[in-house]
Image (tube, rainbow, N blue to C red; front, side, top):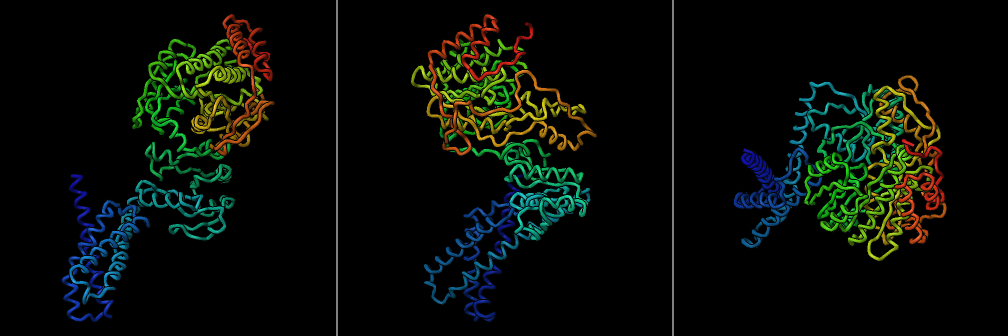
Length: 622
């Protein structure tokens, strides 16, 4: 039935185009001879008409014009149609030359025919498109519609207007556009007028009875989103934004399906663009292993890895449920990559040897770690065993099995740490560097980044739960600041750094300006359309053990150097005595096994002189 319907559609379009070609050819003869062609030319026209129709239809078929949907006909489709008709006229001209030598044939008739046919065929399709959209709008007319102000008179705004007109379930009535570009002021976009700039939003919302503001500027800086949210909140109306291209492609949502503005749209800096070609060239067709594959960062690394077509992806995770979730999610997407879910602990050298000997990974992303600061303060021996012992064990196994590159996922809390978690991550950095110094072969790369929005245990999901419960939102200190990035950005940084490394190196992202946690809490209250003080309270609870007011990106003896990627910086390496580091790390791990907290603290300070231990560092059962 589908093939029959498609054939019927193509036949009806071809018949319509044949009618257009016939009329254009006849009119071309009459125009050529001032509406009074001689009988011999009328006879010539009648004899050659089938040739022109056949040539035009064949040209349109060759350019696949009949595969186009009139509903989405645009300028590029018009160019394709004109090319097809041009091919048809050229073919007819060649046949006429070969058969008649063009003797007695008016040569300007074919160019005139082409011009008229293009005009009429394009016009026919545009009229069909308009009628289709009006029919959909008539169906939607019975539904209640919202008055909408659209922020952004650019390409995204144009696409949204078109899509809402074509979607019978999109009951938005766009009353106007808002854009800060003064050149666009007063102009129309598809019949919708640009009414003013962003700062005019409150007056425009009131004047036009607007119920919804839609942000249609995906490439705009995040500061613009914050301004729009502030104005919309002040006017008491909802704000929505267009889905990201990623959401459209992977979640198959329509462009007209709006989503709520999220914290990721407002905080931090603009997203960092990835050098897709270099990542694909480095990872494509390879065997890759991710430790901690079920965690927030590890699972996102796995998801993004599939885009670059590794031959095999080993998911190494000790939490059974987390491993099931990430494996199940990855298998729902079409991929040629062989997925290998493996239950295992990074501290288990025998298990690591088994997996690496069997799958021969060429790149290992080591994301397994305990990262929650207060929990690590209360469980230092387990954190030491996992974050330091696990990293060292995985690094040694990678080197012994010929892994080309080992990428350690680290944190800005490793810089001048005040928490034991940060100290363990800094020791892991030094331990991996020491492994790289032992012998040539495996390259060891460290990637540092700040707090990740939405990761398990981060402040954002905590605030969301507190808002759902009616508050209060708990902030440790009014001046506490953090660098923020999204989970996809963090994973992208890790992948990009893996292509830049030339040895045992450390990379950090240009993090932009830090964000005050108090400002973050207030933004989330506004996103929830609540008012601080009236609807929900903010309480200050004091810094938790191991926390500091502001995070840092560099140690006191470190410095930036440039890389091929403008937003990623290489940390100038500081030399170390690798043998001494090995001895200290081994002594530290042994002290942890003996549960000697005093010795653990002392050896940690030897390895990380900038560590400022918390007075509350002690096991919960001590």
